[in-house]
Image 1 (cartoon, rainbow, N blue to C red):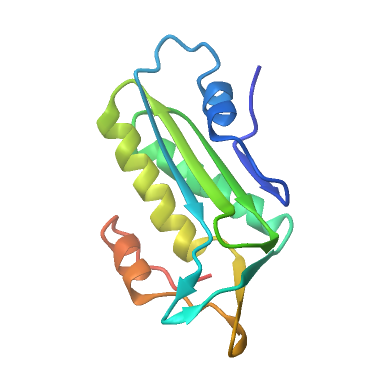
Image 2: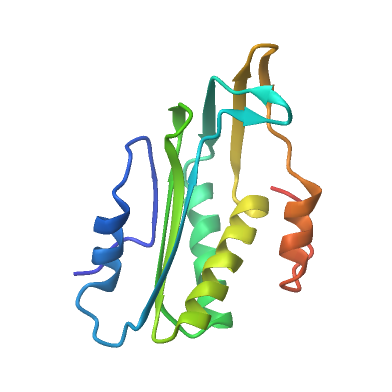
Length: 158
């Protein structure tokens, strides 16, 4: 059974179920690396009551599929899965996950980090935080661009 590589959804996800589906009894898998991002209750010195994520349907999935294709070209991985939630989220809610499987840990770690760096700068998502001062859009960070540049990619934020 083949699992979708990209899901954009409002519903929460279960990391253990996602990893099990990605592994899918593939005896070549010797390493699984995953990252789960969650909503913090603070950002840039302000309390965050909630975060709303928006995306461009169709374009977002296509961009993330291209990121996964690039990870397959760069690293010896057997599979990857990205889930990103949209809609209204609260502190402690899971926002997204990246999971990568490979024969060896080094390739999984690198591919997972590569995908995260790419997602932070190139995936077409927009985040709006609710703070005591009011709503504010979250800007891209220079550190995220620098993280992507270390992979030899210099691209303006999406």
